[in-house]
Each structure stands twice: as C-alpha cells, then as structure tokens.
Amino acid sequence: MHIGVAIFPTDTTIQPVELGRAVEERGFESLWFPEHSHIPTSRVTPWGGQKGAPDLPDFYWRSHEQFVAFGAVAATTSTLKLATGITLVAQRDPIWTAKAVATLDSLSGGRVLFGVGYGWNKEELGHHGVAYSERRAVLRERVLAMKALWSEEEASFAGDHVSFSPSWAWPKPAKAGGPPIILGGAAGPKTAAHIAEFCDGWMPIASRHVIDEGLTEIAAACEAIGRNPAEIELGVFFAKPEQDELDRLAELGVKRAVLGLPQGSRDEVLAALDQLAALV
Image (tube, rainbow, N blue to C red; front, side, top):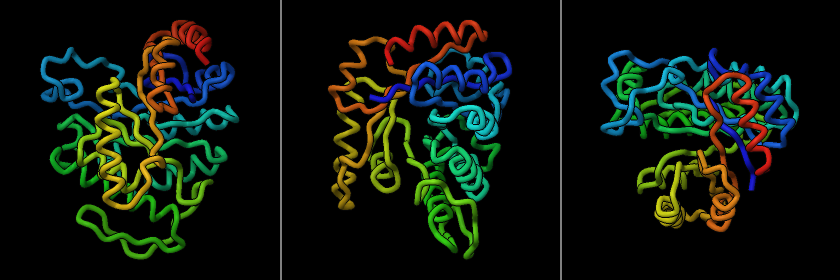
C-alpha cells in the first residue's frame, strides 16, 4: 500500500517547499493539496454541504493556488508524487487546466496524480458561472476535453459545456494520455458511471460500508461499458493513522491511503510527519 499525506497549503502553516522535502525524506509516496479558489462570505452552503456542520475553517480560503505550489515542490523534490486532492474541475477553464497539469507532469517527470471532484460549495460554483445541479456534467465534459488535449495532435471537442475547434496544445504529459485521474466522493450510480468512463482510480473518505457499496456500483458501471473494474485503483482519503486500520484497508483492496496533517505551525506539522513516518 502507498502512503501519502494531505494538507491545505496556506500562508499560515509550513511552507510548501519545505513540506515537500520533508515528506519525501520520510518516505511517503505522495503529497496531496486540496483547493478552493475563494470562499464567498455569505456562507449559505454549510461545510461539505452537510446541515449542522461546524463553521468553515479559515484555511479553506487561505490556500495557495494548487499548481503554482506544486511547481515549487516539483523543483525541489525528485520522487514525490504531486497529487491534487482535489482539483475543482467544474470551476476551472479546461484548456488552461489541461496545460497546467501537462506542464507540471512534464517538468516533474510524470509525478502528477490528478485527483478531481465535483465541488460542494454552491456559492463558489456560482461565482464561476456553474449551477450546482450541472457540476457533474460540467466536470465530465471538461475532463474528457482535457484528455483529448493531452493525447491528440490536433484536439477538438464539442459538448454542451465545452467546445473548441481543432487545436494544438503542448506540452503533452509525460505519460501518454495524461496522468492518472482519481475521482473523490461516494460512488453512487452517476459517480460510478463517470469513474468507469474516464477515471483510473476512486478515492472516497470511506468506511467499509461506503467502500463495499461503491465497488459494487463501479463494477456494474464498468460492466455496462465493457471495462474491467480491476483497472480502477482503490484509495482512501484521511485514513486513520493506525497500523490495524491500514491492515484492514489493505484487506479491502485499498492501494493508497492518504493521512491528514494538522493545519498548524511548521513545528507541529513536522512533528506529525515524524509520527506518521513510522507507518511508512
């Protein structure tokens, strides 16, 4: 099992370059950065879209731009996987995002893991011109458009949400066709269909029940389009940092477990890394 760590990279915690070096030195496979472009102060949508959720922590609106931060980390590491956990694709221009991902992957020697998600903040999505009810369809088309830009000499796309005529777009990613695409979130029928259609992995924040249900949905979705469900790699976000728990996840077929780091000071983050390194 691969072990990675995740943190919001902000101006109030450890600097991303120092963190990347420390994570790599301790033998972790991957470093995961979430993203939010901004947080509307109206705060109509509760944290995670869940009623009764606590107040949203300020690191949600203090985070560095994902790919700029990873560019700095890439330049100062050599083996660490650079993982977006997650990129809010529905809120991003797909042509520019395809170039950012391809550039990072090319310059880092193929170290990108492209984690994507639909997004939960209705106001944030709205500021980007995306209706909450359309975010799944928008993400699907934008990912498919990016895959075309990564793999075709002259790429084009015609959809309801993305459309462009034959175009040249370089650099191409280090891996033919682009980096692994990993979708987060619980896998109901719609999400499972997207995983089967255009993803290489699934990474929920999950219990055994969520994993079992999701794998059943994904297997059915893969069967419907003639894809082998074994091609979908299973991972888990924010696994409990306990040996017994990691053993249990391994038995369920989990290939990657991502552990959470505290949103604290430099010293707090480094101390947590030292503790978690024993699990690696």
